Amino acid sequence: MAIVAPFRGVRFNPDKIKNLEDVVTPPYDVISEADGTAFLEKNLYNMIQLDLRNGTSQGSDSEAGRYAEARTRFDAWQDDQVLIRDDRPAIYLYYIDYTHPSGRRLTRKGLISLVGLAEFSEGIVKPHEKTFATVIAERLELMKACRAQFSQVFSLYHDRENIVISTLEQAREPEPVCSVTDHFGNVHTVWRVTDPQALAGVAGYFADKPVYIADGHHRYTTALSCRKQALAEQPDLPADSPFNFTMMYLCSAEDEGLSVLPTHRLVTFPGRLSADEVVRKMKAGLRVEELKSGSREVLIAEVLSRMNEAAMAFSAPVFGLYHAGEDRCFLLRQEEEDIERSASLARLPQVLRQLDVVVFSELLIPEYLGLDHQRCVREKLISYFSDPDDAIDVSVKK
Image (cartoon, rainbow, N blue to C red):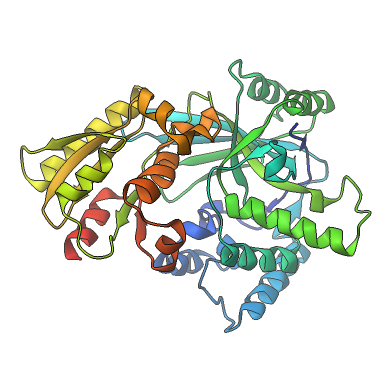
């Protein structure tokens, strides 16, 4: 099924960039305007200069000018050896060391490789999110201008025996090609694996298995669009053409360091919706418990604690709901039988059905609240926060 292949990665030259912390960024679509400015102030070689943040001009007033400037920078940085290409194809073993909200230190282990492109209908690469043409068009123009992919599609696969990571760990080079601490304090470490036997073993493992996109649906769909355009111009495109592949970060769904941390959503419902009305809608498929003891801060802390307990116990999805207009707090829980009864979730692969983000986007918003996904994007009805206090502050002010 999935075709997994090594490639010659392009990376920052440690002889030219002494502090990698100054040039790495999160994915382009989670960078705020303020963060973008701060990243550029650190170092003009910051990755945001290539993987352009939505809405930033980076020196040009036109969209076409932005992409042309990114291509010029990308070429110049390679010419100046700021960016270097590895001399041999490799699969890259990638560790992320981070602190879970519970205080535990965890390591998520994965790999970066090329994965052969396949239409979703083929069942080889399986999605769970909807995509938007405007986002794909913007990413496609950048990809075509630079002829490069600057960030990976994050996908999951099944490997209960940990075969893939064990194979790569045994064959990795002694020293990592990079180790960097990001602005959240997470440590990212990458090793090359070039041993032919190990590479063949990993490719063989995936030969009869699908992969599941966890994050990066627009990036993947952009790569499909790029391939489609290339095929229109060159119908006999070779099987090993770069147009037939995308770069992925692959992590086992059974990896002990894998955890799904909450991104808090602020939902602005058109018109007025009382807390009782929200509860009535949510009871269509969730168990609802109102928390009443204590101040707002105490209630929020209790909700987050209960959510964390559920996550650590690997139970079904649990959500916290705060209604700012009435200053009321609820805990929403989905039991196993609720998941099995849901027609919207039944059509999805098992590995995706219990992801909080999937339940939120497939059930809570469109079915229970009745908000069309396109409308949410068009009218900016949903805002995203990594810090729950920020989300609460904004909701109260609204």
